[in-house]
Image (tube, rainbow over all chains, first blue to last red; front, side, top):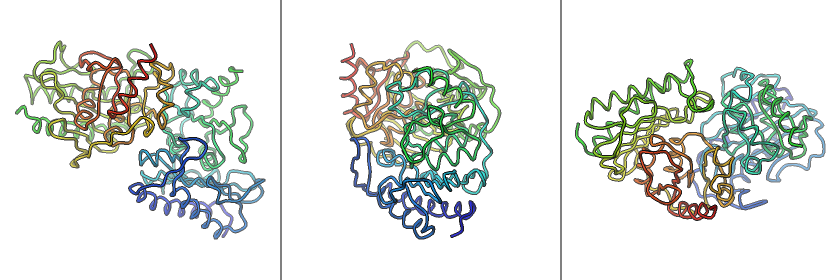
Length: 260
Length: 260
């Protein structure tokens, strides 16, 4: 298929809508739940089957691309040359298993290392956020305005529970300077909140598949995504990432620096 | 009007539906935002007008009742004799102002000190949770099954950001023993999560109007609501409250005790 932002955007949206329809039904079914790194790092039979489906669709549509994916059905990607797809079949698996809401499926597409197209489906709300720097950002068929460039004081922020509990990187100080802390437990859902201007910052330790789609969409919406030492994020490793409005990211980077 | 659970339940649901319809429109309007105890304790013109409306409806329907309410349009209630209404016009005002979702309106009704009828509307999801110990618990017209009696290890919990950040009452230890922490920022929305079995515990410092409706509904659904020293909650003062499954509340009380 054609390597244009428009074609790939449509391709990604179609896959995510199909995944969403199937996962909505699955929330009512029994899940085979297994753990990965620790007892709260969950994976289900649905994570695996969904990833297999997405990977097979990509292999069919773009056989010359490479795929970085969470559950191991992708490729062993060593560099960002050409077209690279990042796949998170179920983001927020804990929410999927325990809540049946606030989980997402995500596909991020990069061309020669540059953010190209991203798609996040909020499965239970049936909302697909998609687009990129070239196309602008959409929620389903509706074009979204860029979120306002608010300051930390003016907005709610979401930081992973793990970071907050250990006060890692001065997170307490950051929360104190904001309107308040929220913890929703799914990167995809929190990227949605940033795109809609419901929150002004998200900080968490993220793997490439947690970050890829959200980064494309944030950058397409005038938001900033960076690593904590203010270097560009590396899409082939896990790292602490700050995403938010330009103002908030600059404020947070200062607070993070002060904790050395 | 008649003082029966069924009549009051219908009365409460009607008021909350009317409030919900009006607040959904208000989320798109400019808000006059003011602060109360600190810069993150917000009140808007809509909190005040909504409370005035609810109080006037109660005064009309049940002129002999007394009203405990957040914004000061109720009565100066000194005891729990007779019929007492607790009114929180907008619960989660910060979410209302900053997010436009995850906020609620709540009415709790007590008869001679006993939980009688409760109603919580999740405004943006158009869901009214209502009923009580006598009637059972409903989401709109659908009767809800009681949530499973899960243990701490098996479920997500919600603790107010303020408590988590200060590790007040051993909250870190409690989070560590659970499936994970979520922070949604509205008591009403979190009581909804407990009733639907999406979370197994909620701990926060709550005023009477934050707690009243949620307590009625939780107790009607077989959940437990208690103060941290395991004495019955006092409905005429603010206090730290633990609400959750029987198993989780008993586990959490043990952890809280260990922090002396």
